[in-house]
Length: 422
Image (tube, rainbow, N blue to C red; front, top):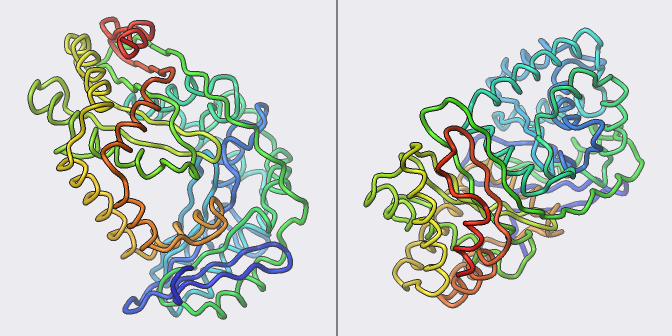
C-alpha cells in the first residue's frame, strides 16, 4: 500500500484524484494527465494531440490567452504542458495558497477551451515552425526517424509533432472531436503533490472538472514492432545514429532488469559504452542508451553522434559490447548501476513536479501507486543472471537502425543482424 501521505479517490464520473502531502515544502504541483497521445490518433489527424495541447492555452470562455499567462504569473506560478506517445499532461506549480487558482485554470482550459479561429491559425504557424526546427536539429529528428522505423505504418511510429501536410490542413472540428473522444473523466487523472490536503484537492476537482465529456475513449491501436533501417544523407559534420531493439512493456516482470541493463551499458560516464567508445577510443562526443516502455511494447536504444570516418568502427565496437553483456557482467558494475538507479529514484521524490507526474502515471499504467520501498526492493533483487538473460532477450531480436548525416560508412542492418547472431 502507498504511504499515509498518498490518497486516491475515484469519483462516480470515473475521474481519479491522487494526492501526496509532502512535509516541509511550501509549493504544490497540480496537473491533469490524459491517457491519450500520438498512438491514439488516426492517420488523418496525426499531430492532433500536440495541436490540442497548444490550443488549450489559447483562450477559454472566461479567459483569453494573455489572461491565462497573466493570472498564473501574477502569483509567481508556472504553467506548462507536454505531449507524449501515450499521454498528454497539463500542469502548474504554485505556492501552496494558490492551488485553487491552479485547479481553476487547468480545469478551465480542459473544459472550456474556445478554439478561436484566429488563435488556431496563429498556433498552426507556431507548430509548423516547431516542426521545421526539429527537422533542422539532427540529434532531435533522428529519434522520430527511429520511432517511425521501429513501428512502421502505424500510430505508434508517427511523429508527436505531427505531419507538416496534415497540420496545414487540420480543422477546428478535428481538434474538438479528438478532445470529446479522449478527454473524458475515465481517461484522466488529476494529481497534486506538495503542501496539499486531499480533501481540498478533491473539492477543487469536483468543481473545476465537472464539464468533461462523458463518452468512453476508444482503444489505441496495438503496437506492432517491425524493425528496419532508415538512413538519410545530409551534409553534416557528424552522422547521428540510433540503434535499437524491441524491449519490454511497462508491466513486464523483467522491467527493472532492463533499466539496470541500460544504466550499466550506456547510462553514465562509468558505463561500458562511454568508457570503451569515448574514453578509450575517442570515437564520439556523445553516446548513451535508454529504455522506453509503452503499454504493450517497448524500445531499448543506443544513440551516438560520430564522424564519418569513425562510424565504420563505432558500430562493430558497440555490437561487441551488446554480445559481451549477454554473458559477462560483474557484481561491481551491477551494484554501481543499482546505486545510480536508486539515487535517481530517491532524488526525483524531492521534486513536487516529478512526484505529481509519477503519481498520475503509476495510476494510469498500474492501477495503483507503487510504494518506493517496493521499487527499491525490486531493484536490489536483480541478479547478474537476470541482466544477462534480459540482454539476450532484447539483443537477439530484430534491430532497428536510423542514421542521419554522412552515413555511407555506417554498416547496414543486414550486417548488424548477422554480427549479433554470430
